[in-house]
Length: 230
Image 1: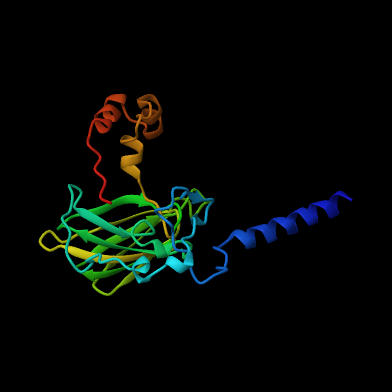
Image 2: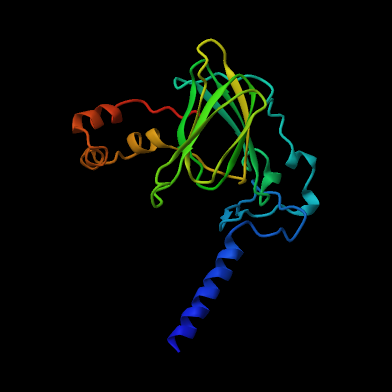
């Protein structure tokens, strides 16, 4: 009957969702990305092709990243030093990466999103004002803004895919944070850069309508240099 078919379809959907809700358990100890193979490609969603296990050594899991050293910040006042599978091939299929984030006085890591990762951040030095915005879900939680002031040693979580930021409110002292992300390649979409600095540019008719401003405002924004802090 149609009701039985509908029930079966719902059960299959639930099983499928459960199977894809997280990375699968590894079938081997590791799968070091083979960056030197002429056939190296991104293999579906799980990562790169594996290096011959007999050729794997400790350097495949290591990088002298100097994450204890301060970085020069850009015009928005931040610098993100990301260590992912492109820097450490041993991260391939392990679903994790790490970043050091430096903030100048009054600097920020501007509103952005990680399409493939949840982020957990801890403040090493200074103070940060952080927050994220929920999705367009039904009221009263539609685009709800959740924020917090973090001090040294505090920890905050940014859920996967949601727009978030960090801002150093201190006009005299820099700040430093370390973030862990739940993907070997989390990706980053900085909102202003993507919207106003795309190549080729999005039509100013589209953006003027979307932001409900004059086209000359959009043209001015698109003429700016949208610097990447990663």
